[in-house]
Image: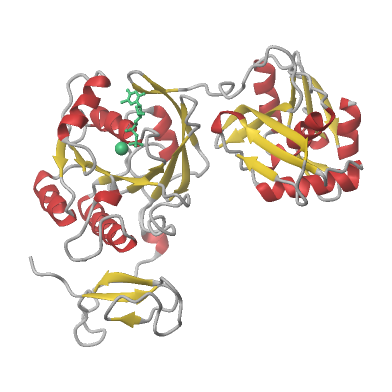
Length: 449
Ligand code: TYD
Ligand code: MG
């Protein structure tokens, strides 16, 4: 195959150079030149060849897209209801988290309904087969292809015509049109572009596996995220067997849906009722631990926040957060000082969400402040309390969405007392749960004192 012409385009200013250079000759940006394929212009003679036509939005039929189950209910929900023909889904995550396992499991399930092709660039077909045996898969119709050349894969796919395809992983694929190494930004981008074109033209659902780099991004600065329809992250604490699939972007469904799985001897098992798996269940009350009810996607979930406050030897004490936003902690400590009169300028503050969960909502403010204070004073919060609520800069406690649903979830799991924003107090009493409604930070602190 003839090599296509390549050129180097600056990411910062768009300047074109014939050769790679450490610095862009136009704008002087460092490390910004990236190899790209020169596509010959197909336009002949101005606008004469334009074939597209304008349609009225109101006249385009808005049919619900047909969806096919991916094999697990948890993954279906994250995808917005199942697989859509022609959709390209990127599954990102740390190495060893279980991406290959999840997609092989789903490919096996889907293969009885749709023709399925599993392209492996990292493992041999024997290794994939061993894993399939480990999963105790019954009869399956999955076809395996061990190949890393993108053009060759698409050639084969043209004749095999799969309706679902897995590319494991996109970083091992390379296009013969580029000289750069597999895994480079240029290669990953070019291969993804080719696969996306194939998916749309053939109505094939394609899953791309993407490894997260050390910087925490998918192969370079998020180059893939805008090219695909759906971006899923597979995350979890390496020490825990629970794994979470989270939608970061979804053109066909809601984001922030969660799918929860547990890694077992026989592959990933769905966790359909994940509400309380992330609690660490202490024998007796410990200081620095507070349970909150968060809401991820459409489900309420109980999670445990932990804080450790310790005298700091540093001029600038540490503020470390795992699973929560760091700036938010700094802000809350300032509110605590200003409206609660509690100083922590000489204390290191560490906070963590148990089980590797990430909480991305403001309802964690109040539980976080209580956890920090509980550790600071070495005074436990009773283990049958739940807390949620947003804290404003003026020291007011603001409501969160779906308060009543969260309270019911807490009652279901045997919690006895809830400290919540006044506006979230339920109209009718909830059996077995005493609700303490607060509207100022100081009130919340008084209740616990
Ligand atoms: P894998 O899917 O290979 O991860 P990734 O593709 O994201 O790199 O998962 C590998 C891990 O999962 C490995 O540490 C072994 C574990 N595992 C199980 O515990 N049970 C199983 O049935 C399988 C297949 C894997
Ligand atoms: Mg893998």
